[in-house]
Image (tube, rainbow, N blue to C red; front, top):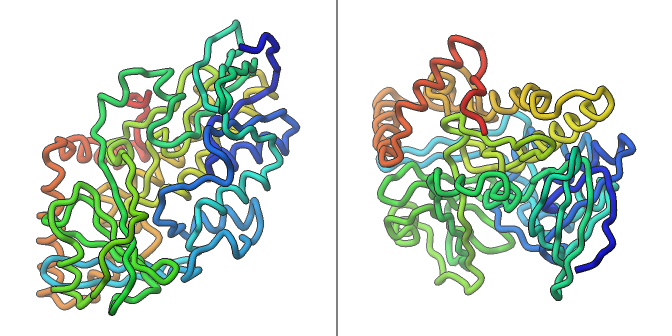
Length: 400
């Protein structure tokens, strides 16, 4: 181990979109910020890549127009199409117009380079130890050498399996349900699905999370907890004919629970958790916009804490409550029924259907929701929905 300990203001773990947003705020404020990333950059990122309009606006306002290399083809997505077992389909355009289809390997790297902060890749987070008001962070470079840093603040922006989160709460991963989400890539023989839309199936026989869309001349077929043969289903029901999956299929563990039941984790002391590591995930599985906004809030909270000598955790939790409200509203049945918490108009699309089809859709959604009863989320969702109605916000007592 090196005996030299370098001092910086902030260390951000993970070269993610959340990290880029936080680092831009911090760097622009004049704080010395170091991002550490365990992989070599630009690194591969498993992601469908369809960014929400809100996330797109954030990128334009903070980083500028995206380079062509940072986009897949088709480069834009017009909206979302929901498909149901009754064979009713509903297409909804995004409120903000078309939105980009990110190639995460290059989009994340572009944002990280644009934020202005220093980056150390091929450096794994090993541990952190409090030293008075500071943190001693130990990393390991590729090849085995350990490097230590002393910093005032740490941000964990390192995804759902966050090592920073596990360092704070070792038992947390065992307390929540995990979903394995995989996506395969098929060469297309014939695909009647509109390639301007992200397609999602509310079908309990196909799994907890099933989607498809075009990418770079192939078709993504994605599943979570696969229960049926989605490729055969697409051919039988939608006339989609695909070649066998290519060898570059991929998967990762995801946690959908915190956003549904307001069970976020935001850190301890001067260590903040943000992005999907904190539990942010939109209803259709898009976490990039949440990552960008929550990452920026983490950076802003540190700036406020440093300038005004205020305790960081209460400040961060007060500031992040707006992102909690926006994200958990998307899963709130009362908000879905009586408001418009999403970036496409589901109530209007539903009401545009004939009454008979509306009833079919509501029945199909109920049957799909029953797929999640094994996690016993129903009462928790309704409790949080009522609390939101009563208080105008989601109480923070359940946050870690």
